[in-house]
Image (cartoon, rainbow, N blue to C red; front, top):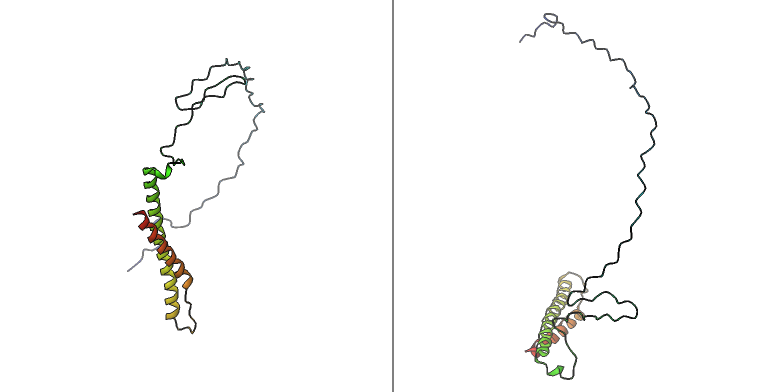
Length: 160
């Protein structure tokens, strides 16, 4: 393969570029102009007092002026309140609510107790299975777990 002769043909010499002459930018300072000032605000006009709208039913009204009576509406009652009266132990609905709460608490005790018992048993089994000459019998968590399980079973049975 032959290459073209660099001397033949157009001039392949480096271009002759000269940098442009540097001229600093033209800067002319502007004349000072003071900032524009806002006009003074208009004097405030007193607002005539308006009567407050009456409170909506079931809401408290505005406070009364000294020496005046303002009827206050009590707040709305809660949907259900456990009243502690002499016949509360004979109240069927309250008894049912208490039994349901006791059953839920018993189920939680059974779950938490089982977790404690299993964790104590795992600690014991894992340390016994290791090649160490000393192992841990975690009877504390197992005893506490058994107590919570029994307590939960009794609560669930009592709830029916």
